Amino acid sequence: MENIVVPADSHVDHGYTANKEALLKRLSRIEGQVRGVSRMVDEEKYCIDILTQISAINAALHKVSLGLVEEHVSHCVVNAAAQSLETGDRSYVDDKVSEVTTAIGRLLR
Amino acid sequence: MENIVVPADSHVDHGYTANKEALLKRLSRIEGQVRGVSRMVDEEKYCIDILTQISAINAALHKVSLGLVEEHVSHCVVNAAAQSLETGDRSYVDDKVSEVTTAIGRLLR
Amino acid sequence: MENIVVPADSHVDHGYTANKEALLKRLSRIEGQVRGVSRMVDEEKYCIDILTQISAINAALHKVSLGLVEEHVSHCVVNAAAQSLETGDRSYVDDKVSEVTTAIGRLLR
Amino acid sequence: MENIVVPADSHVDHGYTANKEALLKRLSRIEGQVRGVSRMVDEEKYCIDILTQISAINAALHKVSLGLVEEHVSHCVVNAAAQSLETGDRSYVDDKVSEVTTAIGRLLR
Image (cartoon, rainbow over all chains, first blue to last red; front, side):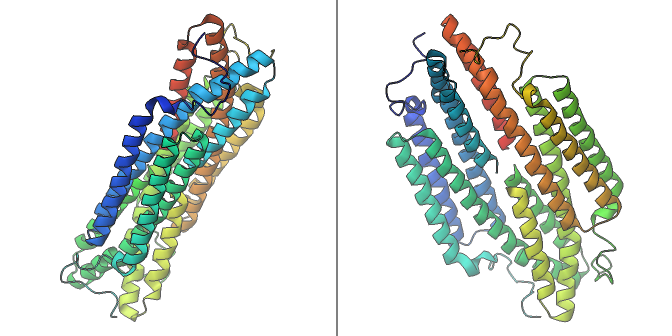
């Protein structure tokens, strides 16, 4: 199967690179939202309205994180699984699984 | 007591205005962190490292939110309590309490 | 105003006591949900279905927390504000505000 | 490699079954914590102390969720990857990845 490959250099393709433009657009929108919050603080807007904006930023960041997790499992973890199958050494995939679990754990906090 | 007053225009002082400079500095640091994530994506850094940076942004935003909640309760809710005490009309403080609870609920999600 | 009082013993009324029965019913439902998850694990149900149940428990616990925060601000913080107004000593309300903020911060994590 | 297999019935082994006893013990401890919160409410303990206990339950549930996610990726997703490699049909693993991502998304909220 062509789509699951053991890359020579696993850093060449991170999964998210296919959606790089969309991801950068999202991040630039989030940057604009943070700048918007600064403007609200500077203009001394109502605290509750600022908190609402921050909740929107949290939600946008969660979406970005989740997209990265999905691409990561879909590419890096799956490639490591292929590598483990090929070599008979389970440590490739185990390392990747425990790494992404730690990252998800940090997002849950 | 001087510090709990019913302001003529409750929008003049939001509590956070005293720490406005510190708050703006924090937000500009968060803006820089988001820009840093964009740079990482652009340079195709490792997904897990990007997720770690996003977790740091989440934590920084939580701190800002929490500071705003504290200032809001300390000023707007407490002023509304004073107004309720003065007028004998509990609705001033009840409205503020339910408003801030809704905002906290959005942060919890 | 009758509803904002400085209680002789602030532990006599915590705000949530008015809704004690409803709160206990909610908690017993959550206890049942946790037991349901144990049953699913024991019967070796599909992991994703178990995770869905845990998300439902998280949501139910968030609702309970939020209700407690609302009652706490509405009663304990507002009573402390009244006490501060009466005595001219802002520390009563400041202590309560910083205490509830710390509790909210723990919920946000 | 023995450890990555395409199970005849993927519901026979969910990954977490190896740690079933430990998982059940954790869940029974969480059930006890919820019962403890009910007792606190019944005895009209201080709201902030109840919120602290709920935060501890949240943390314990997060740990359980994270463990299930790790086992799920390590077993179900990796088995689906093996199945995709064997059959040349990427949909096995893609379906599992999108399923676990949705579950993680629900935990993040």
